[in-house]
Amino acid sequence: MKMQSSVFALLALVVSGAACAQSLDRFTVTANAAIPGYNVQRLSNVSAEQCAVTCLDTAHASWCVSFDYDKTLSQCDLSDKRASQVALKTDYPNNPYDHYSLKIDALASFETTANAAISGYNREQLTAVTPQACAEACALSSRASWCRSFDYNKTASSCDLSDKRASDVGGLKTDYPGNPYDYYGRRVAAGTPNPIPGDRHVLLIGIDGLRGDAVLCNGCAKPPTLSALMAGGAYHTNVSAGGTQSTLSGPGWGSVFTGFWADQHGVTSNNIELPLKKPHVFDLIKQTYPTATTAVVADWANLTANLRPASVDQVFVNAAKNSQQATDAVIQWLDQTHAPTAIFYYLHNVDIHTCCYDPASATYQQKLLAEDAQIKQVLDALTRRPNYLNEEWLIVVASDHGGLNTGHGGQSAEERDAVLVLNNRHGNPARTPYCSGDLSGAPMRQIDGATPHILDFLGLPNPTAGVKSPVCGSH
Image 1 (cartoon, one colour):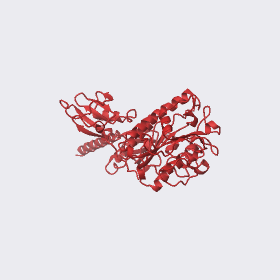
Image 2 (cartoon, rainbow, N blue to C red; image 1 turned 90 degrees about the horizontal axis):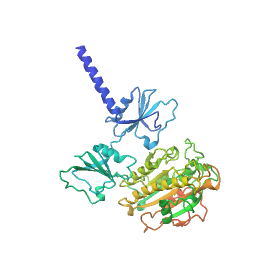
Image 3 (cartoon, helix red, strand yellow; image 1 turned 120 degrees about the vertical axis):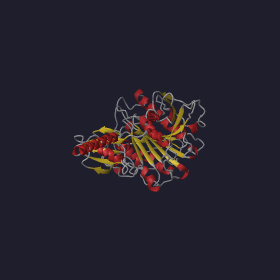
Image 4 (cartoon, rainbow, N blue to C red; image 1 turned 45 degrees about the vertical axis):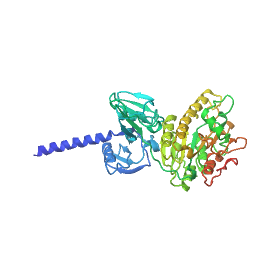
C-alpha cells in the first residue's frame, strides 16, 4: 500500500512539473534583465516555473503579463507591464534577474470568417503554414505597418497576407468552389474617446539631431514628406536651442516637452536619474482632460524614463535605432477606433555621431531621407483613419539640437540650430490653417516651440515660460 501511495505521489510530481514547464513555455525570457518599479506582487521561495503558473492562474491572469525572477533569492515580482512598455534594466551587479514576458497570442488579434476571402488584394504569400503562423507573421515588425488581414487556404496550408480589410474592398468573396479559404481580419482596437473639443489630436514627431538648416537649403536632402508638411503649414528653420544649457539631448527634449529651460525643468544632462521638475505638455493636457490618452514610442531610455509624461497611458520601447518598430507602434495606435489624444513619435537615426552633422553630407542626408520615409508611413496611416476628415490633427516636428562635425553639446550656431514644423491640414487642405509660412524671420527659442503651440491648438492655458508665434493661433 505504501508503495502504491509512493507511485501516485511520484506521478503527481511528474504531472505538476509538466504543468509548470508548459506554463513557462508561454513566456519569452530575457536573461540578466528586469523592469524595476513595476512590481504588483512578490512571490518568495519559488522557482521560475512556479512564478509562471501563478501568473497564469485565474487569480492573476487578468493583469499579469510578466515577471522578474531573482535567481539568487529564488523569488519573483509579478507585473502588469511588459518590457516593451517601460524598458528593461540590464546593468544590475552580478545579474541576479531574468525577465519573463508572456507571449502574445497573435491569432487572438484576428476575427475569422469561414469560407471567405478578399480576392485580388494579396501582398505576400506564405506556404506550409498554420493560421497561427500566418497571424504571427502578420504581426512581425517588418509587416505590422501594413498587414491588416490574411486569407488562409485550408487545402494548401498557405496564406495570402494583405494590406486591406474586407471593409476596405467592398466585402468578402464567398463563392469559391469547395470553399478552400477562411478570412482573418485584424481586430480594430477601440481605444478611448478623445475628450478635446473638435476632436483635436497632436502627433509630436521628434527627430534627434536634425539641424533646422538641413531641410530646405540648396544641396540638402529635400525630404519629400517633411517638405510637404512645411509647404502646407508653418516652419522655423533656426529654432534656438542651447544658450543657457548644453545642447545635449536631455536638456533639449526637456525644453521641447515643458516650455522651460533646463535650469527650471531640471534635466541638465543626459543622466537618466535626473527627474523632470516641470510638467510634460502631455501631462498638462491630462490635467484639464483626465480621460485624454497619451502615448510615447522611443528607443532612447531617457525618453521612456525620466523625460516621459508622468501620467502617460502607453509606452513602447523599440530596439536601438530601429525606426520601423517605432513606426509600427504608432500605426497600431492610429489603427484604433479612438486614437490617442497625443502621441510622441521619436526617430533617432539622424543623430548619427559618425561622419558629420552637415546638411551637405551624403550620410546625414541619407539618414534624414530614411526617417522621412518612416514619417510617410505614419502619415499614410493617419489619413486612412475612417473618421480622419472629422478629426483635426496638429502635426508637430521638433528636434532637440543640431550638431557640428561629429558631435554636439556646445554652443556653436550649428549645434544650437533646431527645427519646428506645425501643420494641421495634412490630407485635408480645406481646413483653416493653424499657422502658415516661413516663421524663420523672427527669433524663436526652443522653449517657444512645441509646447506653447500644442497648448494653444488644444485651447489650453499656457503656464510655461515659452511663447507661441504671434502669427499662429487657435481657431
